[in-house]
Length: 418
Ligand code: GTR
Image 1 (cartoon, rainbow, N blue to C red):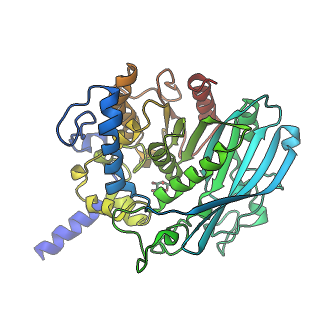
Image 2 (cartoon, protein in one colour; image 1 turned 180 degrees about the vertical axis):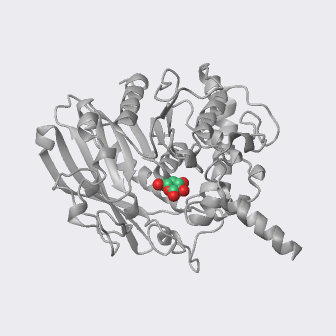
Image 3 (cartoon, rainbow, N blue to C red; image 1 turned 45 degrees about the horizontal axis):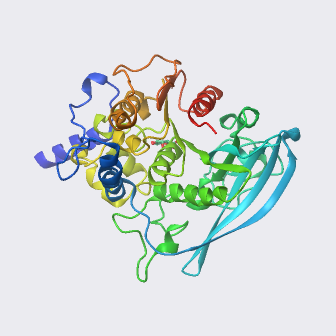
């Protein structure tokens, strides 16, 4: 009975989210500037040659999982080109990218809008979308995904199939006109084309292509869905790199929520991304895990067992044993500009923990160029964008708004010069 009571208490403990700052446990973050062998990181060279690969490896091993090795074939097909999209503001392209391995093929559609009046190669924001490319704008020329989509009440989706009437339902999160008028392109992929977002023990999506003979799910240290989505972004980047209308040195990876966790991992694992944006990414994204404020490691791994690698589940109830925390993920972007955005009412994502990750990551940025961040959180709706680690906490809830995009565009203008 005693053991039963303990189990019940710890179960309750695991279920309840803490929203009280005074109840955040005392914690010690792993030191970014001390290598596993105990040597001190003093220069950018120490960081780049020794500590960075170590930290990246720790995240692969313990959090997101590594991509299995092995050759695959990548090909593409241009599905459509509309030179006069959005009333002449843009050229629109759809490209199907296919990955072939072990006699299996996984394809995803890359939707790209480029400013029609571009005088030369343009910088591009790239991000995954939640519900299908056709949901980012009402543009009827966009193909409707054939992949699994999440059921929902409004607009109603009951059979996991995308519907015509859902066109543009996510448009408020993708202010295309604003992005294009500022001289940027936008590239997006439906994340479910890469790996459908539900737990099926990794039988669909990209994972099975990489199973070796006799394997039917990833090893404990191999990729979960977030790493697979990030890998898909890198394959889309391969294509963008080969396109002369795009400036490959100015591709910005951006994502919201679980797709913000993904943009961070994409930026960490693929240094071709010139800037990284995390919009309300929370636990397993920008928020420090050790604060256990809002969503916790235990909670996220229980509710979404397919997002991270299985090794991450070992830390569900002992987060202080994790050899990393999320400030180290932000540091992996250095010296590239990184922008972290929180929302005041999005306490589940722990805005303070998201800010602190950036604050502590500055230790690595400082090796390149001294930057000063205050320990106290910035005021609501007052972006801090004069350092390579940008941050804002917006009023309102868990979402992507025009205000958020304005900051990303300003930050990119400032930091990514031609
Ligand atoms: C929530 C999850 C968050 C966040 C969010 C989203 O249910 O707990 O970590 O990822 O979903 O992606 O919308």
